[in-house]
Length: 164
Image (cartoon, rainbow, N blue to C red):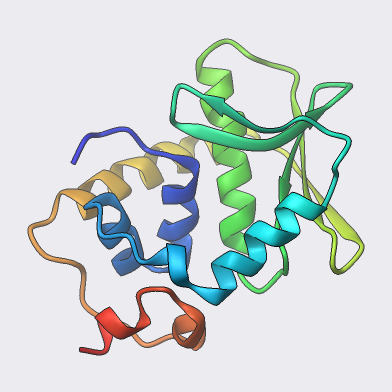
């Protein structure tokens, strides 16, 4: 496992450490998952006027950036809002580490016709350093973390793998 941490990995860390481990160890099962497919369709159909999927260093993939230095992340629901918030904070953190400052961020929920503004403060930056260290430890483990049943398991692409 390389020590590069992507935005989706931060998201998975907050969703399920086991899912993070599978993904970081190149066990990908999401291409056939209905929930993932619906999310991609939502992404393609929303904010059509904006240039989308801004890939930076093959590490972060920002859904789109608008004028006034505002990056946007599109999510279909608030079901796992904390994960989306920290993924977005990671984008701000990552860019700040590379000298990009003064950015604002927003999570858009087009199906809900809502949005959430996201900021990165000093406390968040310190917490992010700890999160990144924990993530790297999880990803380097020989075997996935213990299974822990959660409400979201039913919709997870790795559901069958975890329940074997």
